[in-house]
Image (cartoon, rainbow over all chains, first blue to last red; front, side):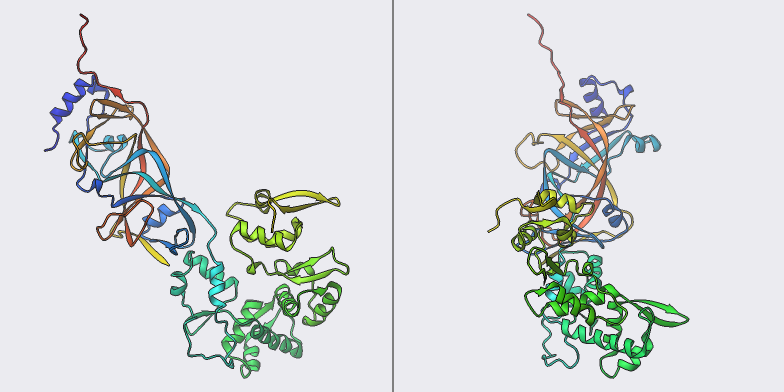
Length: 390
Length: 118
């Protein structure tokens, strides 16, 4: 049976509390029937997540059995951790604040509130980088080699739809879709595909040769004519895809044009040259590279950040392929890997290889402070490992 | 990979609950579960200070607007969670908690009988 107002008043008297100093309404708290069932738990919400839930949107927890679970909203990813408190947290429906009590007509002076559950821990969230390395790995299982490929097209086990990717990658949908764009993936028959590099270069070569033979400005490459002239050589979707990957689309007077991206094209051609050997004589490479890019484009070493590394200590100077996307995703493993490739790094050289590790408001400097030790070498500040690298 | 959906109930605005934070543990007077037992009476002073009378103790607290609100998740399917660290299945958001009553002061015992000096 529920407590009565009279019983409450007796308790106040015994406690020597003056009712005149209290608001008229009392909440009699008791434990609800399901309070001990342990079915409820608490999730602490980072900024923005409350609004997501209030808008009726869902959150998803994603995790492999051997991985740390992450929580994803529509566009962000968070690490999850249990936080213990030494206090008891009771969750009470229908419990009013003094403001709410004062705002209501003072009709009742006793409210029976049932505690729905209690806990001494809650889930804590921390925004983290989405775990996107797996995305490239999955799409590289079966790169698209073009319609003339000798590969058996009936084998579909290595092809992924958006839904497939959502169930395999610890990231939010928007982060996955954004990354697909960054890596120039395209949808072929409903599946996301990456182009096999040589096929991609073949497509690019068709376009740059056409630009040359038509004497088009690199800033005004017409889509329509490309499709007409090249449509017999390659699928139209692929021609358009390569233009979208290596150019910026715009419309002028009702026609679609592309402004070709010099840096990206030069970079791709460098990769094509560098992948054929362990390393190259730098000056020889620079000469061949400049000759290989389309007329009107200028090559610069800074176009190769995160793709290739120059060894200034060797005589003659050399250059070799080192792709940031081939390096480990975990911070410590990334630094271990970099320091095993080269013992001491300048900030300029290492930045392209750690930039992607930066958390939301973190700087490269902060990462270096945490994972590396600095020293001076010939008047230049260099970074090396904090621990011995085997 | 496991995917666990946390969905809003969708029908109208989410309920707003309150968190009551107490030091230590709450145990039933008799052995058995807490379900059905009274915890105590919650009053507010005219200045808005929460006062909780639990058993023989008076607790004074304060109202805290949570910088990071909580969502109360209820597991669908009925079975309780095996341990706080494991999550399975599907959860719904039963309510949001944006306010808590924090009782941190040492409870003042209620003295009901003062022994007379002999």
